Image (tube, rainbow, N blue to C red; front, side, top):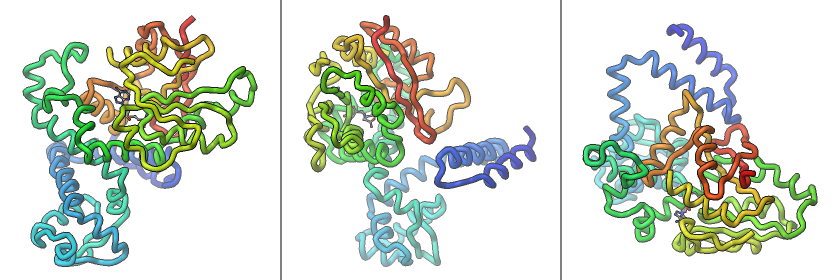
Length: 376
Ligand SMILES: C[S@@+](CC[C@H](N)C(=O)[O-])C[C@H]1O[C@@H](n2cnc3c(N)ncnc32)[C@H](O)[C@@H]1O
């Protein structure tokens, strides 16, 4: 497509844009990215891309200095660098330099000389879920980035079945070992999982017709749902809220430190349980993922269903965000996001093998429910 065609396509997307409709803003994102890719001169495009690292460090700096918090507390008011200095205790000249970047990337507005006001991004970045997201995609990535060249040189050809994750190479321990002792990172990680699921995802039980299956009355016993690696229980709590009368057992499994840090009260039907998914399953009814799935498949019966709430990557033209997620999985744990073909391959190698029953998705949700059962 020529330049005019690309611009006409963007124009059409803008005309149909509705910010409340996820499929609409996703189309806008794609169209804007396409315009940037095709029309911005390559030397500018590549320079802007690499400077994103500096922008991201500045976001961490602004957050740590309390600049977002201070601006967010005074929404609608303009604050000078001096005002921000009085509240945060940091040097006003430093604040003005950091805020120059922060306003240039749209994370606050500049309303005058060294004067700023909060905008939507200031507020969004200041909430615990997004602070956690910043910890995951920046703070935890920085040590990996600083050692990634040596990692690639020393571990060539980097077959993840035989090579340590880049994170372990850089830090000398697994990410889970770090999170067990670094409270700030652990809180950020858990806050991000909870907020992401609450705000950006459609609950799994609305994608998968669990209500219909339960209403069909085919159950001879109380249903048991086990959320393996269920973090702080956000998904099981949303399930419990949707089915307040349902007699069921909801088992939340995660690492002991995650279970110990669950904030607030969960529904009384949810039983938080410390359980390492690399060990044999106790709740009866790539290498690591096969091991986790095999431990589950081992205790499944012919009627059991294993629901995997995960991404299915497109074979071609995958979006930047989802491709980024795949790289985070790779850097941190040698994990991966998968295409449909890769999911089928993985399920077939589980012991005992699993097979795909159906994929359940919803517009605007990055993940779908992959319904599986024991293979016949
Ligand atoms: C990426 S999070 C996903 C959380 C949640 N299922 C969701 O979709 O938002 C992975 C979860 O696995 C947990 N986890 C990591 N290693 C584990 C292990 N060996 N056994 C059980 N849970 C583990 C982490 O604490 C974390 O809550």
